[in-house]
Image 1: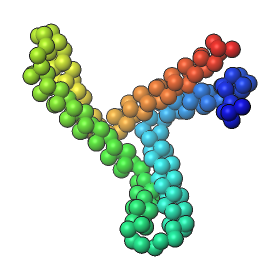
Image 2: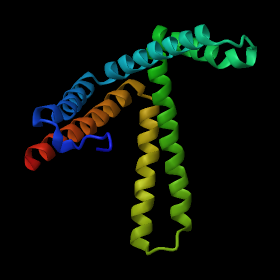
Image 3: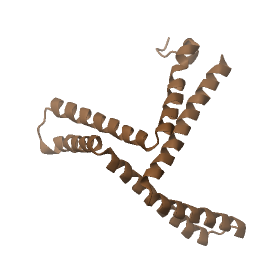
Length: 171
């Protein structure tokens, strides 16, 4: 035996654990909206603090260049724990600006594209919608976070559901 167990060696109910967790997690994220993002940011902050503390304790070299990444990680972790609302809004502003810039790039590319007039029109309309959506999102970071968490939660839930269906149909 090569040390790896095949998925078929597991009982069906064990194989269902991960997809069910994904399904429930996706539903919870979608239902929580922006609050889910804040919880995720806080969890990342806690993990960053734990990592930094372990790194600082276990570091044998007290050189500033070696300790600097751990100290920066510790500061970021504490900030994520202390002000998740700020980081949630900051992420949404960065996301909104990215959508606006992507839309502008598509607009520029759509004007120059050597495609049919219909394709160019669809591309330009899509790019314009992205710019407008980005501007709206920029001025409403809370609503943007809610929508994004619903989308992310839906993708995670669908992934879990597909895993459950895959297991049910393969047994």
